[in-house]
Image (cartoon, rainbow, N blue to C red; front, side):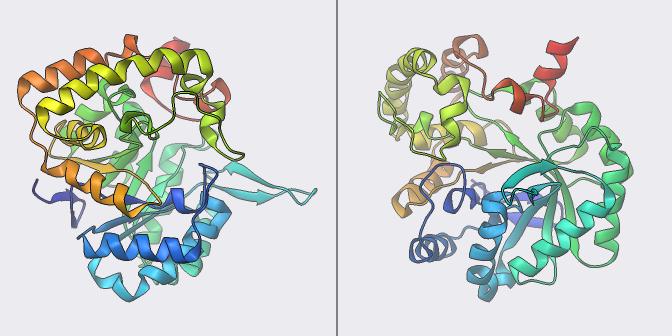
Amino acid sequence: MSERSIGPFQVGPVALGCMNLSHAYGHPATETQARALLHAALDAGVRLFDTAALYGFGTNESLVGPMLKPHRNRITLASKGGMAGVRGDDGVMRRVIDGHPKTLRRNCEDSLVRLGTDVIDLYYLHRWDPRVPIEESVGEMSRLIEEGKVRALGLSEVGVDTLRRAHATYPIAALQSEYSLWSRNAELGTLQATRELGIAYVAFSPMGRAFLSGKLPAGTSWVPGDIRAGMPRFQPEAYAKNLRLLAPMQAIAQRADCSLAELAIAWVLHQGEHVVALPGTTRIDHLHENLRGAQVALDAALLAELDALFAPEAITGDRYALASQREVDTEKYAFEQC
């Protein structure tokens, strides 16, 4: 597949999410593993690398920034603020969503230091803070562009209304949200809105947090720190029901002459020329498998089969528990509150 546009940047259809190296799945990579993976991605032509202040409470930026620095002029570096770790009076780091201008500025400046760069190519608001009008948050982020600290702006996990308001304040280059065969909220409006507005749709977790790869064990026992342990669709009863989808998906993959992971990536990329897939991994073999997904061609019949197989009503369990669902400005949640 051809390169895709994110604001002023041209990137490959498959990017690399760096979160897995430090955060969320219970097995952080060693420095040696991280370096090998990043170099393999660079050698394979990956252009977009994505991190955030939240990941490992800053450790992910500190890990990947120096490793990518020698290649800075040939990559697009993305990070996020507005959701970061804050140390409480008890000394424990906790995730805090804060979209106040002063906080966003501090988050950005801290990220620049950790990343070891003078400018972040694509800077996202990681979560919209409903206490702060989106216009205020984006307005402050636009001032970071004026000061040369950021080159383009993005948003993460927002709905159509918030996206349009933000874009009217300052041009938004990318919307990053979860999108995969089994997470289809994008189709309630944001996928079409980004297409209309000329905004890239950066689809994180395009393999459903590894579920769609078929490589998770049937009776998963989560290690400490793995966020899937608290997600409804990975709970034992729901997970057992969801596993039934993989056999018919495998049959489709065989007809498309590809693996399940390649099929999942290919499906996402076929949803529009403005869509970029953002999988994450700690393994080089998985990295190359993800990239091969961009070479898989799916005809209309196969796409229709996949759409029907993974219709939203066929998925058991929400993607987030209620507390986390309340933190994302998705159309599904907004509709549920009406």
